Length: 342
Length: 266
Image 1 (cartoon, rainbow over the protein chains, first blue to last red):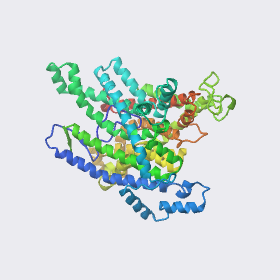
Image 2: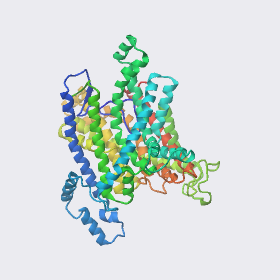
Image 3: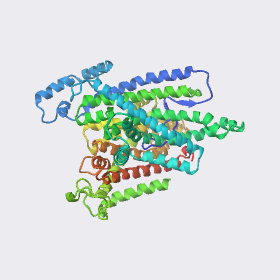
Image 4: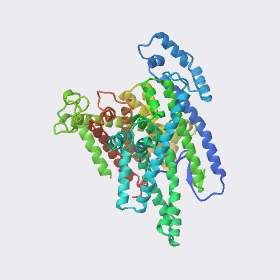
């Protein structure tokens, strides 16, 4: 899907994206034919299959990119040869590449991601234990981002060109430029240590969630402020808003009842598309705040050279990301009846 | 905006290039007796956990960030332009194959694949460059593919084809030049992204390894002394923020200049 996103320019994300791809989305006059939407979504689902297949292949190949003997690397240079041979057999590395690949795919079909080398427990169980924490953090970060960005973006658009607008844009720019691995520790020192208001590590009550969520949500909020502002400004110039104003509708009502709702559509889309950035950011945020989620599990398993667990975490995050993108398409189609797909 | 961004980037480049020659400190010299000492006239940014001058290490860290950014963006842009222009211009099965590869790589959220790759290949500057380039080319390829699809329909491109020009010649002489403005914008903004990514990897211990100074590594080590010596964290973090800000402003400015149609409503 290609959605034109003009107002947000996070580092590394270009706004000059290719909008002439296979899956072109266009806004047009209202269409009574919802079949277009469903056909588009069915097509997106079908297209997701080779992508997921490719993701699985890439994740499978990770272990084969390890320089030298993967089993030796995982156990360390000084490991006894017997253990190396045993691990090689356990991981199936003594079989042909094709057999390993088929076995990997068959395992995935049964949701069998292998066994953690460090704990000896199934990767699936390790991930299942950590998953709720990551989703909790990601959801909280999205809430923080929306809670900050929507009021700020709307204010900036309504009071365009004023000090409010400039302040909102400056904050947004700062949020985009501040790395979360810097912001997180600083927030921890100020609110956790100096003021003593909030805990700085671990998972517990709501108070444990505040600092990690704020740290993770800040960059997304910064992007969304710009998006909300630009989107609302565009809607405010639309004929239907002018018509409403001409009919005597107050400016506040025109903004709240008419323009605001429509302006949220690209914002919702961007939230979906940015979910991957939130998941990646969670790897760092969870490390900083000792949050027991998938991100921290990934970093820990990298440290322990527990590659089956690394593969499991990477696969899960990538599949979640693909799923979120699909969901975004669905939400977009439901939210905007003007959409026609061709 | 472009001037401010350009000024910041220019200043950082000059500081990175000349700074270590001007500042009278060896970045590896340790004064263990004065470790964690705060900023002073002698040491503007203070001393780190091994008593090394943070200012000179921040300047050297700028070199790492700029070089990694430049190399990764250059490789990504070159590979992305090559594959994107071939996909867009040739179409058919070639386009289908390249587009599916792009889709697969895009299925990994940004930095995640780089983390995975560096995790298996081992932490080093070379592997960071390789991993970031491997995920970086995709954005350029998508962009150039779109531009090439459009350029294919231009009359002068069709005329060149009718006159018997070969595909490489058409791509180099007619298609790729049309993509340059958009590529320039993407590359400038891409620098900011790569600098953040390199710092993230180094922060996680997967990037540049000590004793080579890198802003991400400095932040990682500084984190353990956040309470007793916050200057270890503050200055490298500020440096990252300033350079990313510079490239973001520069990128926005370049876009406004080269692609007036994309100018945001201000």
